[in-house]
Each structure stands twice: as C-alpha cells, then as structure tokens.
Image 1 (cartoon, helix red, strand yellow):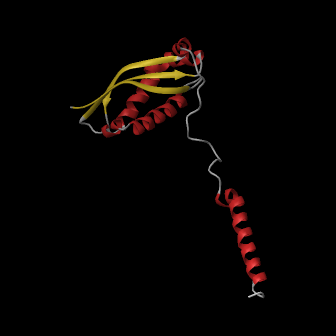
Image 2 (image 1 turned 180 degrees about the vertical axis):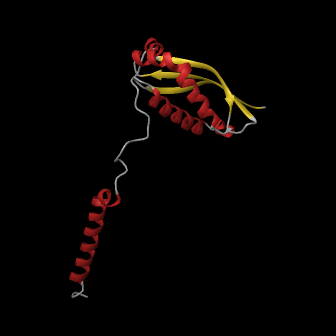
Image 3 (image 1 turned 180 degrees about the horizontal axis):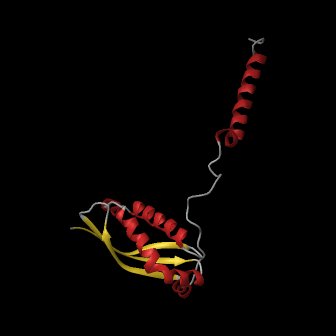
Length: 153
C-alpha cells in the first residue's frame, strides 16, 4: 500500500490540474457568447415628458388585411426618434414611405401573432429595422403600438 500511495497522489493531482485547466480555459475552448453584436435594443437615455414629445411622432388608424385574408387589423403606432432633425424627416415621409412599410409588414403577419406580447415585440423589432433602413437621417429608437384591433371579417 505504501508503494501505491505516491502513484495515487500523482493521479489525483493530475486529475485536479486537468479539471482546473479546463475550467479556466472553457471560454476559449467552448467559445464565448459575449462576442459579436447583441440583439438587445439600444439603451435609451431617460428623457423628460417634453423631450419625449419633441422626438416622437404618431401614425394613427392603419387598417389593412393580415396574412390570413379573413382577418383585418386596425392599429396606431407611436415612434420615438433619436433627435428633432430625425423627427422632422420622419414626419415628411411618414405617409409616403413609412405607412406602406407598416402595411406590407402587417400583410405578412398572421393574426395569431398579435395574441402573444413576445411575438408582437418581434413584429415591432422587424418594423423598426425596415423603417431605419428607409430613413435618410437619424433613426427610430422605439416603436409602440398605441391602439390595436385584430378582427375577423
């Protein structure tokens, strides 16, 4: 037994060192999830009510069919932009560029998607991306659905 003791200590020490090395190098071996661009929305600074009104715009009463032709949606939206100049540009093109984007996006959406708030957030994220690609200056920071009616015909 005394002859095996050094061997047992060596094996236990080796196993401990291997486990410690794997633990310390696991980020490099397995890859880190912190790399790349985050899908989370950008952090918006805290604004006063007057500042929010200065950079916000609305599109009211958008009515269109959904992906299922038996359903119709009537919605109103509120858009918060990053600055006053972006809001001015947004207001100039909202009826000729932004509203058609909303109608197309609603036309591709199934009615059951509006029953779940998580899927509704995915819808607004998709809308946010498409609208930001259209804006000449500035960007939309946040989109809120202010009124929503989804009904069958």
